[in-house]
Image (cartoon, rainbow, N blue to C red; front, top):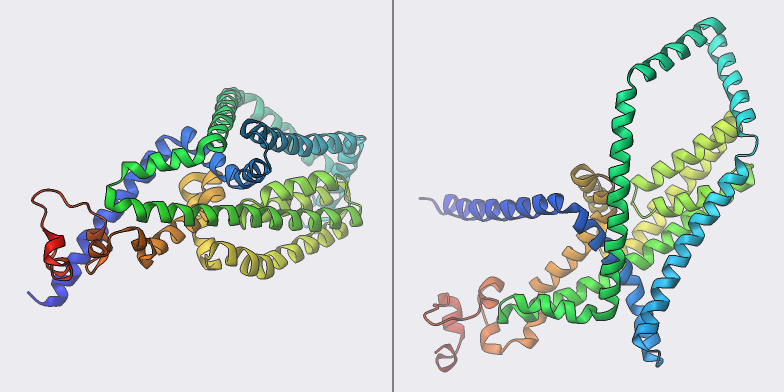
Length: 384
């Protein structure tokens, strides 16, 4: 059999096994999503809070007090943002019905002057048909309300699980990681431990840089809305800040909301100006912030960011788009670290000589035969 066929066959079955393993992992993640998503949120938040807790403990703060301050401070910031947004929305909703009536009247004028030439009676008839359809399909809304109640229950459970996981990661994150490392074979532990440290640093860099990028987006779009006189500029900024944690998708969605608010409460010209502001901020993010700041922090090419976000959204919706980039960045750094062989400093030189990384990380058991390349590289006294 030609050597090319044997080589292709060897690669093929290995790739099939890897693809099958990835498929099983993804299936388990989807099935356990109500556990996995809160855990991932806790890990992502802890990447920001662990350095703060470490800073406080190094300055002689008690560990419990440092953890409590980090948790309470985080909850206070989140609650402050939500309260600010809700207060501004409530203040901006004064006279909302009058503005909607004016917008509806303008819409009817536009439809009447358009090539459709819809009359008042025709528009009212279409609205009446829509109301009748809603009443006839009320069962759908009842089912949706029940589904919403179930989703709210899952959200509350996930929030509690996130806080619980975050608390234990802040208290004993190093002990949890050491326990995970001990699950692996002894000779694989240096590689796993070093890769975990490298991945943790990358995750922390991602979280800090993402907050910086989200803040710049929120200030840019919120300030643009305020200058143009678009109502609820502060809630728009808060929405942009939260949406920016989902790369590409979040910026487009929150920008569309800002333009829609300008269209409803102002006019077409202001909406076009708001669209220009959103596009300008997104261009700065896409061509300056993401390549220079985010690319340096996580070492993922912009094309890779687009592809992993699309794949994450396709597989798991919004959570998949949210965690796609940090997961891809961490895996990229961990795999690169293992492949570089930098972890071999913690392994006896004889075990690290020659052969592939796979064979070097497998512990030797009684009767275990090493590949010939390793046997030739290891001194006879050590191999025995």
